Image (cartoon, rainbow, N blue to C red; front, side):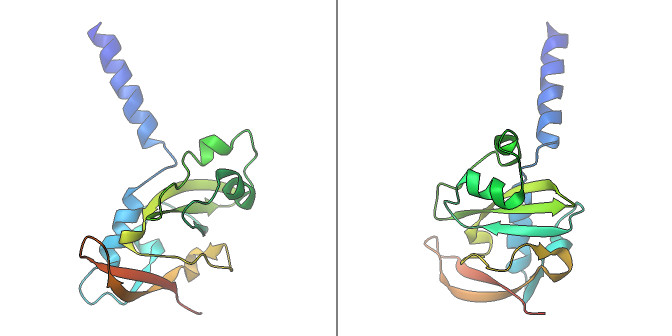
Length: 152
């Protein structure tokens, strides 16, 4: 019985470690954007995995739309895009290498607001540099920060 419980715990940990969803990226973006004298956030510098390009999806973006943009087959869509934003304060980031989605991130806009969605997507890793623009105050009293793609 103990062996079965230990095995179940181990499998759950492995499944979460291999998940394409990673909310830690959002926290890292927020920490970089709120750092002392932060003027820009270089997304490749706050991620600890390899990727070539990223996509930004605004709040309420339908899963089917996201999968179509990413080129994910309908039968794989729910696995690759395991959640939809159902909140004004949450958007999604997809990190792609080749044709594979390597991470799909739930991003709190309190950690840096990328809206409105960019017309020019995907964004190559080398160009994913965003200016930090203070933009008022959030409901919780923290500064609201816009992240604006730096023109190259």
